[in-house]
Length: 184
Length: 62
Figure 1 (cartoon, each protein chain N blue to C red):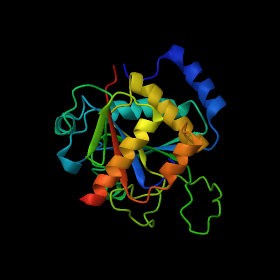
Figure 2 (tube, rainbow over the protein chains, first blue to last red):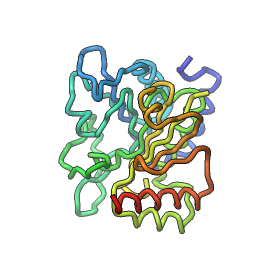
Figure 3 (cartoon, helix red, strand yellow):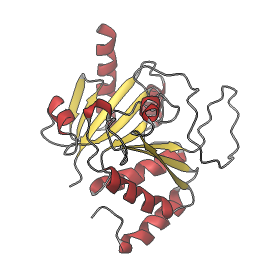
Figure 4 (spheres, rainbow over the protein chains, first blue to last red):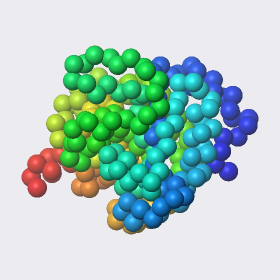
């Protein structure tokens, strides 16, 4: 059972209403049903379950949006976002500004895929703001982690202390943190 | 989130056996930073920062 239980939905909905500040988009990468292209030779064991879960989740809040990429039909999407395993879910603030002027973008509410004009950082997310990711089905206990990450991204802040935040912000080389978990 | 140069992946270990084997994941949560520094369990903030800095320093020497 990977979908959100009926009895849990009001709780999740209330939490999202209470906690979300900025709109968040979930980018889902699956192989879809179409194709043979599989990045890194990875299978896509739980793509459909993940899609169902995220569809239900995003239906619970107007501030949550789902964009799905079928890397079979659109292999460039995987390259653009540096996706090497399927399914992958990227959590990011919606309309992450990409212009260098620092001006805030107005939400034009288009549903098109983000542009790939941003510079590629070696080892880092190819697209801006796309650096918090889940590989595999975010179910079981990991569902709470997913929700917590969505809230953090929406608020644009983490639970680190100010001192730690300063250290982290000063890092000038690409860092890849991988946390292995299980849903039970 | 605090720094665009940092990519954080949460990986479902059962689903990605190959990755789990490559990083010798025996218990979870296991954290691997830049393929170089790793720890098991959840650590206090200072220890996490320490691991982060170790990984970056190791990168510099490579």
